[in-house]
Length: 313
Image (cartoon, rainbow, N blue to C red; front, side):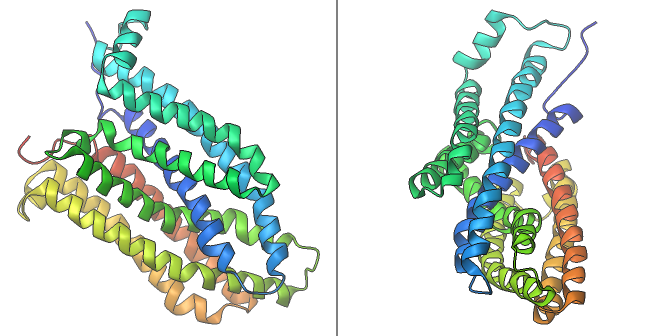
């Protein structure tokens, strides 16, 4: 008997979550470089920028490689969802998926974009403006391809729904992606400079966080606005928020998102004013860990949400 495997299966959810993390991380890399580090005016500014430019391409490369692997896994999962887990991969079946369906077109765009990102990433260490712009353009193409086979593709006006979803992902990347890379790339880069007096290090971290704060607020506002529009379009009314499976999953996502927002507000109101002192740096590390953990849970729930039937389906 053929076993069932669908788009809501845990393995498929995990693959979508990984692709979302890659999208958010890649967008966050460019937001960090152009909207945060470029605005940094603290001690050793040029040295901090050079150190970030040395480390950031490595993360972009790994995110691109992970996106390629997840895209291949997505093809295998789609084959299992369409043809069943008991049917072996065959040339005809794969050709049907990749060349005779809208899903296949989106897969080709995403996979080729991810491969291109891994090819460009090593060249970013040369600090070439052309290479960075090309990498950003390919990243946008990769991110835009993700909603093509989900709910936006089935909307009355697909291009509008896809555009809103793209802006939603840009908001997530600009806020949460840049926060993650601020934590694992920019702050360690600021600590790695040869001028390593403790007060100077704390001042660099304080300057980076102050440059990040307005960026985070702007992208968070974009995320909230596009998320509200998307939720309203999908729900069709408040009652569906608790009377449908889609709505209840959305409530779970909003619960985790509220933790992310609370941690962000705490960083902005309590931690940021005290930055420059060693104890504030420790508090920032802890609160950022809470914020990023809750954000990861938001991504996982979103991966479930995009395969959940909308109210009325």
